[in-house]
Each structure stands twice: as structure tokens, then as C-alpha cells.
Image (cartoon, rainbow over all chains, first blue to last red; front, side, top):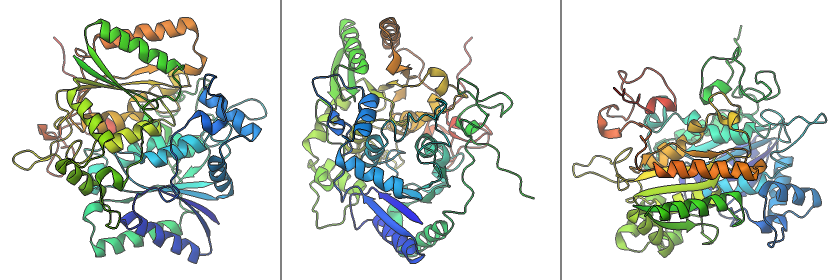
Length: 259
Length: 259
């Protein structure tokens, strides 16, 4: 299979860079093809601007509209097009980053901001005019996974840990980017206590990452609800018969019972 | 009072730029002093690198350690120091941005990544060695608020809306950045359906924003739990007697009953 590994760390000698190299070696050894977007090494520009869309600076910039026009007229910046081509090629996308302020480093957020333009990542319509997102969209059929490290211990991002549960912290990415664009999301790989890791701890981390990569295409994805699967009403609000709760977790359906 | 307004939109003719100007005028008219960090206009660099810390590229970069050393030796990059000075000066901080992929635009995320270095935003110890965060820290006593716009309708970010509840989407920022560094957080101001706004709709938005700014220093803040207030155990996990639930919402205490 084809795997796009998007990596965001400023130092090639870092823990995460070593894990990335180990992962790429593992995947390649299993017969997969891996392409990388090593954002720091690429000196990736993370800042959306009118220049991305060959937009006339004298005219007011409506980001969505300008990006869509540039996509359809072939005037998107070349670095954006190159990343879109990698995404179209990939069967799975891995975002790999240290968790900075409970989200992606800016260079990676700006990869998302710039690459997923209107008509590519959002604003996609079906033949009957319905919006294609949350389980549908150009990325449908692909898998996605986050690999991330934290300085803190694992229990601080547990269900009742002070930093918030990892699944909730990552909801804007896993649901709002991956699932929104159509990708199926498998649970993240977390490397906790990253600043205190020991050589034996590193071996454990590599083993766990390797294990998870081995089932990247077979693990049950997080059962986020499909926008167009009947669970939401015409205003995209969850119907009463599907969970009586509130908050982000209502958007995950109960997993199927296995017999 | 002193208010730092951090703004992230690529076009000075945008809806958000107009709202920003109206807000600054209102605040100034009420006798406050406003300083702005207009990140696009400043051509802000959002990418953390060794150069921020005058770090020798031949040595492996440990971001936290290198940033702390640079802070304490006065070798932080000048653009970072200038923003830290504004933060120290401010009584309130407003982050104002269009919600891109359910979070901050990269240029703003990189303002957080670069400015809140170890020893300034995190890794602060009390005299007895305890960590000062989540209600304590260098930013304690300041207020913080998000002003953000979405292309979608308000009900899509409501409690059961498909995009997720706004409070949960903003948890990594409101709890993980503002509250973490010590700031008291007031509820965000949302401008929904931003791409479809009409002149009367704009007047409504200005009025609401003005109203909220009028009570910026008096509104009840979100009652996030204090790390050092007794609710968490020694591993920073919420004690059983404080809410039996899980997920990010357990970190908000029930508001006090008003008699």
C-alpha cells in the first residue's frame, strides 16, 4: 500500500525523528511504499496567503473562494499541488508530531491550512448537491493515524487526567480534519514522557509503533458518525434517537457488538 | 486596563479585520489601552527553530530546555521577547481568528508555540518545587477571550451539532493554553455564517462583540478546576469525589449557586 508520512519536528536527531525512521523502515520492509513530507526539512511555508492562489492583492481575499478558483484553474502554488498529489496517491496518511500546546506544531497546522483547499478538502458536492464530508469526500477510502509524543506522563491525558483525554484533545484533528475529508481514523499512537525516555523505553516505543503499523489497514477505525448516514437532521444536528448526550463524544457511534 | 489583541487574518479588508477595528475603537473609547499583534501585518514567523534560542545547530535541539536557557540568558529571538513584553503588560489577552480546520490559523498557533517558552508559559515552579499551571503561572490575574468566526451556521457547533460543541473544540486553547498559563477564561465570541454575512448581520455582530467587551473584566470566567486547588491527586488525575464522569468536561467545576 501507499503511505504518506507527514512529519513535523525541527531536529533530525530527535526521538520523533528516530521513530519516524524506524517506522519508514518497517513499512518498507513489509512491502509498502512510503513517501514523506518532512516539513522542517522541506522548509515548508505554513502561512496561507493570497500568493497561494495567484490572487490579485488589490482585490479583497475570500480565502475559500480564492482557493477553489485556483484549484480549478490550475493556479495553486506548486508546493501545495505537490502535497495534494501525494495525498491523492496515498492509501494511508500518518501525521507525526510532538504535541505542542495540545495540538499540532504550527508548521503542520499550516500544511493542513494550505493543502486542504476548498474543492479538495472541503466544499465538495455530490451530484445532487449535498455536501460530501464526515465519512465522504475526496479522501474517502484512505486511512489516517496520528503518532504523537508528550512531555507529560500518560495518565495526565487519560480519561480524567488534568490535560484532558487524548481522544478529546485530538477531536479537532481526527474528526475535524481526517473524518471531515473522508478518511477512516484509527486510534492514535502516543509516546508519553518523551523528554525522559530511556534506551529501553525507546525500544518499547518502537515495538508498539511497529505493532500498530502492522494493523494500520485492519484495525477497526473510530466509529465516527457519517454526515449522510441518517444520524443527523437537515441542520446537521444529531437526531434525538441517537444518543441523548452532548459534547464531542456523541459523534462516535457505539461500536458494533461482536458475536 | 491594558488589552493585547492578537489578530490573525490575511486580509485587512476582511470581516474579521473590520470587527477588530471596531473592537479596538470601542475599547479605546472606554478608556482602555490596546496594543495589537496583527500577525499577518507583522509578517510573523510561526515556525519554532533552533535560531529562536541562539542554539548551536551542531548540537541536538531539545526544544523545552533550549528555550528555557535562552529565556534565562537573554538570548531569545527579539521578536519573541517583544511579544512576551506585551503579554506581561496586558491585563487581558484576546485571540481573534477565523476558525480554520477547527483551530487557529498556523500563524497564530506559531505565535503560541514560539512565545510561550519554558519558564514563561510552562515549566514554572513554586518556591516549594510544585508546578504552577492551570490557574497558576506567570499569566495569573489576566483575562483571556477568543473571538472567532466560522463559515458554518451556529447550530453546527452547538452541543449536538456535527462539527462538535464549540467549547470542546476550543478546549485545547482555552484550557490547554489560557488556563494552563494561569489566565482566567471568559466564554468565546462566535461570529457564525461568516461567509454569508449581510450588512445588518455585521451590525449585529459588532453590537454583540461590543457588549461582550464591555463585560470582559466582570463576566464570570469558565470555572476550570485549579491544578493546585485540591481536586486532583498527586498524579494530576481528578479525584473520584469530584464528578464521576470522563472527558474534557470533568475539568470544569459546577458554577457556584447564586442566592
